Amino acid sequence: MREYDFAILGAGAIGSIIGAHLRRAGHDVLLIARGARAAHLEQHGVTIRGLAEFATPVPVLREPRMLQRAGTLIVATKTPGTAAALEPLRSAHFDVTLSIQNGPLKNELLAAAFGAERVLGALADTSGELLPGGEVLFTRNVGIAIGELTGGESARARGVAQALDAAGVRASATPEIQTLEWSKFCGWVGLMPLAVATRAPTWKYLSDPDAALLLVRMVREMGTLARALGIPLSDRAVLPTASLCAAAEGEAVAMVLRLGEEYRRTAPTHRLSALQDVEAGRPLEVHETLGYAATRARELGLDLPLLGTFTRLLAAIDRSRRDASGAV
Image (cartoon, rainbow, N blue to C red):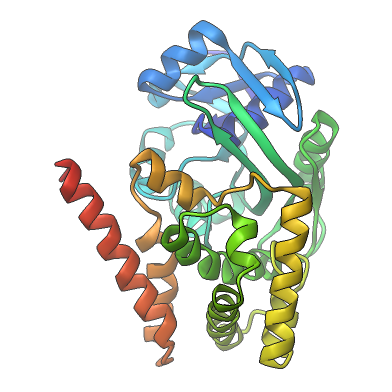
């Protein structure tokens, strides 16, 4: 089998956006997909709407064990079942691997499958939505950050970032990817429960004073965990995480309300991926994100009550949805 520049595991919204842009830019790209999504891509290719408008064919692989090698593996699946999804790819050779999934667990799973020396850290402030007809709505293109988990600059991180950026998906290399990943994670853990509970576009709950207060308190709890792990935080993530943790509570709430106004003006249709999962009947990314954080907090002897409460609440919501649909 031929060698590809990029193999992308997962052909949902973000995987399709990245794959289509790289393919249009002339890279050899392979989308690893299955079922109805694979059939749609084989017949129609990838169609992007929203921030970009184009369609392009992209090769599709239904059986991951068939892949022998690729320069870069990008994991763009939902977090549930990641270890099982990576298993058939263990025999393939990749120069470098990275995941744009939510939470730090993704890096540990890649290291277990391919070796820590082949793993780059990554986070995406990039959003999209898979539409019922199979097209992808591209809604947010702030940037994908890529870097060495051990810190410092590297040619391979710059190379992947430059390829994505030149293709139209904004990206940059960074020497502080662990700080940025955890800064995003702290914010995402606060945003996810609000998205699931309100079922509203992102700007609406960010603009609500009660929701903003809950978000601030949740981010601060996560900041406590990051500090205990020795990880500094930054404002250069989805939320101004460092400032939300350092400011007086009232000032932090005001920051969130201003962010809500910004989302209303610039991304009024943006919906967190967790809300998309609820409406599509997909499993929620509870155990791999909030559950991961709660486990680390317990290991460190930290009492983070909101984190524990929301982890249990979302786990219950997830089980009740699946029980109601007859799923196991």
